[in-house]
Length: 82
Length: 267
Image (cartoon, rainbow over all chains, first blue to last red; front, side):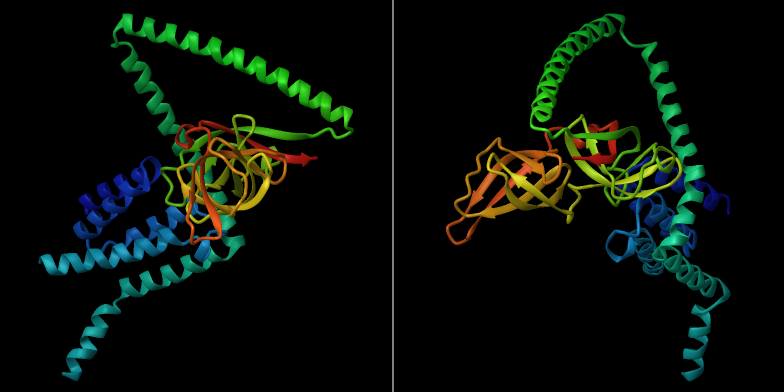
């Protein structure tokens, strides 16, 4: 549980201070480490609110879409590695 | 077998996964429905601007701490270089001001005075950080900024437009973002074209075959003659009825620290 909380804090800090291409692999690592990583979906929404706008194609929900993909990828990777 | 399938389904649709599905549904609705998204953005930005400010303050403190340990002679030499650079830039600004004065006088003589109101804003979040290639600046509705305002860098280089505002901040979409399109005028003959963003301050456009364009020609906006970029490559293929031109902003978009937002344009 403590590992999960620390990882969440690291990911939130990464969303605010690092480029997106650092955040995405970090989130995937979290999805593998803490599967099922439900929080990643909320972080995807946070990315869309912080950086996106509804005027972008598909309503600017790239963060949410990528987060859902990462959530399932984490589950899948965990399953095949186990 | 049937029992097994039912059990598997129940396994996936447990309380947590149902809660997740409901959260995803609510999030999609909140993000796609503009008024909800706007309220969410306003709420998040109350905290977010503080978090980004804290990051800047930490970096500044660290830099000033590190400076104490740097070589004194190196600092003196760096200072001398910066002073020389400042002198050069001041001379350029003086030259530019003289030119601007001449243009204004000419416009007055022709009975066509152009002026616009600009708000200077500091960049809080660099576009490299955002998956949307957006900038976040520290001026918003309180300063009179509205969605659609054009954003200029260094006086006359147009870089993007405001796509979302909160009371104290704005999001700016760069025209050079991949997929972004904008009408422009190319070269000395003001040939109309559509500039397609290619990322990092680069653009591509097509002009009809036989158009007179040359390397180094400027590409300007259709209104206000704001500079989009300078042509760096022209590609012409015999099989194509057009010329493909590539141009880039005359500055590095990653080094943008402050911008000017045109809030009231009169021409």
